Length: 306
Image: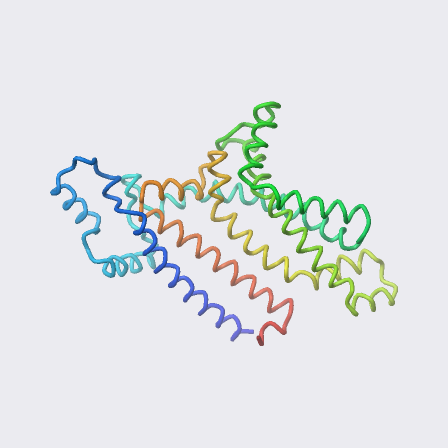
């Protein structure tokens, strides 16, 4: 097991190095940030002085060495757009808002998808199964931004139960959390149902039934435990994507999280903030995948030797 974890750790580090190279290059393909920072009629001397101040006059490979050296220490430089603010400081300041919204969205996803998926598989061919398929169909056919706008129009504008945008009390979290988590409900439901159908047809489940175990115990203990690997994979990706912020949902609801920060930084060609956001997001994704791989090793020992 230790060798398995060590291999996954090395792969995670190599992945982050590759991401750093890609994000460094792609950020600079968006254009020169000096065109946004300075007025169009700025003299060449001002351009040269500003470029030297921000280190933009150096060759790209030197800029990358400086970037990766500082990034290891958690320093991604100062923001071009938000003067006087460090890029990492901006990400950390916005992260609690994203974490708050992601936590509720994840709770909505799991609380709805897990029982619906399990019961849909256990009651295959009944109205319960049809209801589960309908939930999955509706969830995957509605874009999150469209659902967010519809929720705002119905529950905020017409009924006035919730605010239209912004971050305030718990009322402001309900609509964006539902919009963010609804697609995951559909995907989780389909994965859980599919995995449970395979598990309930296996020999060990049939043996548990022959032994006379209660049906609820057969389904929720023996069946769900062995059907957990496919949903667990998607769960890790969903957690990572929610923790790094949903650009669409946070933009629709003007939620001051990491996703909205990323959009604002891209529009301003703020290299420093874009790099900080993407590297933090990549680290979260890599960490969650590492945790899922480790859980694989415990749930199914055969995975350790593949």
